[in-house]
Length: 115
Image 1 (cartoon, rainbow, N blue to C red):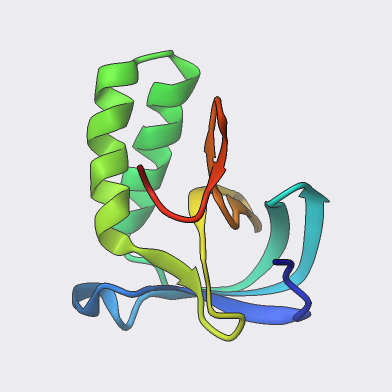
Image 2 (cartoon, helix red, strand yellow):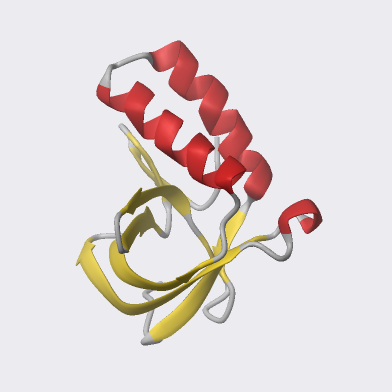
């Protein structure tokens, strides 16, 4: 499975967050299942942005129990690429860019969904 569209939208499949999305372009595969894209419209709520930011702060500090709790929150959003119809994982926002995986990364390989 690879992403072939030049533009797409990252959306939440959770109906509670249906109007929140990122419109992205220049989607580039960095390595297996890992992508980087330019954000051209950011319609994520402050709530979503904060959960993503806190998750990555915990990961960088090796705070496993806190990152696990935040990952549970991220699961609720059930992120996907709207037009490519692909679930995505480990979203990270960095200024005008977003990175994500098209499969869930684990030490034993990649999964199609959360464990």
